[in-house]
Figure 1 (tube, rainbow, N blue to C red):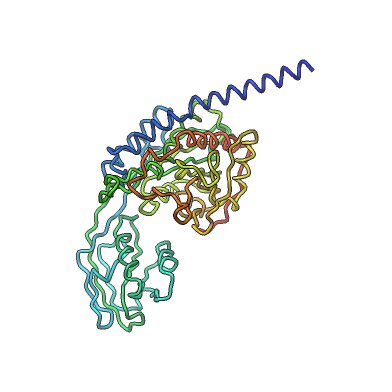
Figure 2 (tube, rainbow, N blue to C red):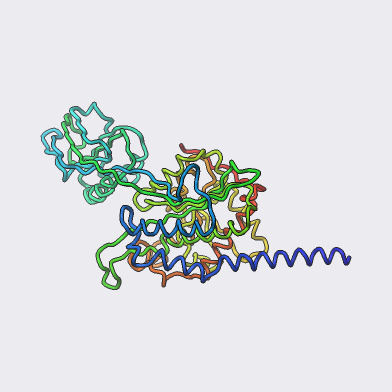
Length: 433
């Protein structure tokens, strides 16, 4: 009996020391230090293709260096760089039957210098009628790899203008061109169209660091968040002009940096290789995570913890967060089983109508079958029960709960331990690509 009591006491002491160790690494003060820097005004809202986001990338890389992370693959830095192409129309001329086509009623999702269409037979034709749901009809087109002409009824003129801004963004180089025409004539007989674009290469970078595994070094566990935001806009009557993005998603990026520091301090207790990545360009189409996913064999990614907006309380209050796509794998159950003696609770996504599982940086790997889930506390309901500062200049550090953030990050660290160690492997998501 004495021997048993000594064994139990020793085990309890080890658990207590472990808890104390994690508190020394992941705590509200350290969370606040990182958050303050990432969401500061001098980061200029971390918009893609600006000096502000480059400054943020340098800071993240410096923190990865402090955590003694290795570079990814053959890289010589913590940056995973890639190129995007911006196509600016300099000439749009043509006719749809007798109607003139100009830059006002034509937009193209393309990286081609020129588009010339002399017949409706040249491209597949898709029609967006007055009664169609614009978003559900149009946005899936962007995921296709085929040349199309999309005739959009003038009823959708306002949404068409918004889409013009989207198609004007930089994108990956592609041989595919998707042409959208705003028209009252959705059953034309002839089309003749010429578009000439000025092409500009723009470069972006994810920030990545690696802790190599031991017995299962060719199996990967990914911790991620996006570090870009919206930049600078028009001054709000109650705020300045900077979209600081403290919750979206400096909070998730802070978590990734804290987790890197924590797992590094455990000194090679990870059997699987851990990849820590801060994605760029989430706000303009998820291009950072798309590029990242193409550099890995998805079959070797055992799990992805994407962390998005954890700075505020969830709908259940403190010590809780939800997991998007909870029902698609057993990953949530694995995480909760590792928190048996904790007051923290992971919940299923309470906002299924928002389709959040495919709206963040986990989506690309999830489509390839990876148990890739987003962890969040963001309230995605209708006002007044939503996040009041989402995509507003008021998303500043003063609106966040540092203590609760620290508890969420600790919960992620502790709940992931059997996946990182290789003891548990979540089931795969059904592939859509």
